[in-house]
Length: 147
Image 1 (cartoon, helix red, strand yellow):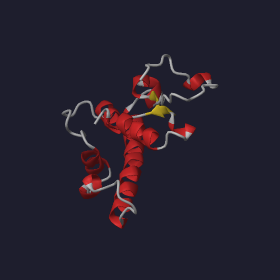
Image 2 (cartoon, one colour):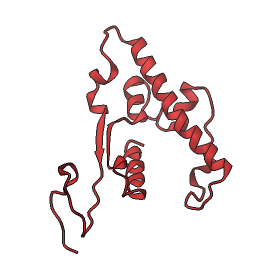
Image 3 (cartoon, helix red, strand yellow):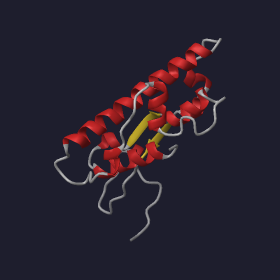
């Protein structure tokens, strides 16, 4: 879904609030949004999920059985690790295939993101801590709400 990547990145940031590398993500893209642009002559639901996108672009079935398994339990099962690996790899491969198809269908030399800059975004996560000191202006909150 269009908002899924933002939700996933926020969950990642909340899981590791002590790691600055998860506070800001630049050049974030959503494969389903890109698919809508590349396959704009097709119905909206043609590539509306990663499973459909993988089936069309990679000609493989993405098994989502483990998607709703108990991810909070450790250690993860082998099936969960396999699912996570395939899920992540299929996103990258799908993106490459979509960009390749776009390039092949264009008469001009403009890159996909030059022609569609609205499909690339930055996501920032800020965590407020009552005892935090904010030396870095990049993460300084605009305001505080007393609790």
